Length: 154
Image (tube, rainbow, N blue to C red; front, side, top):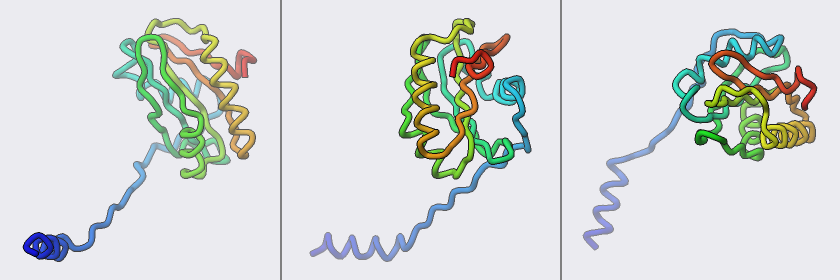
């Protein structure tokens, strides 16, 4: 009986909690080329560029303006997992029109691996099914970048 009384008292004490999420405002950036993507996203990789792989997804609106940058996964030295359903879920929740996937290669190499090509194609196909444009998959290093779209690999 004392336990029930404590729970009741605690419930009255806590009351009602609400959580509010506020989007972080991004500078107004419009993406027109792979060079624009690399210039915009490079600072987001500053802490991990030479240490481990990370995957980030850039969400854009219909005018190709950046509305969100989502930190998708942290990987190891030689790879990172991409969960296609999670990427799509986030895009649908944000109500994005287009997306771009970007990941770094700590080795400094720009050549896409078979896994890079495969996941990029899977993500592009999945985006097409739900009406989201998959614009590019970018590999970024400290010195340069590789655009799968520019190289005709998507």
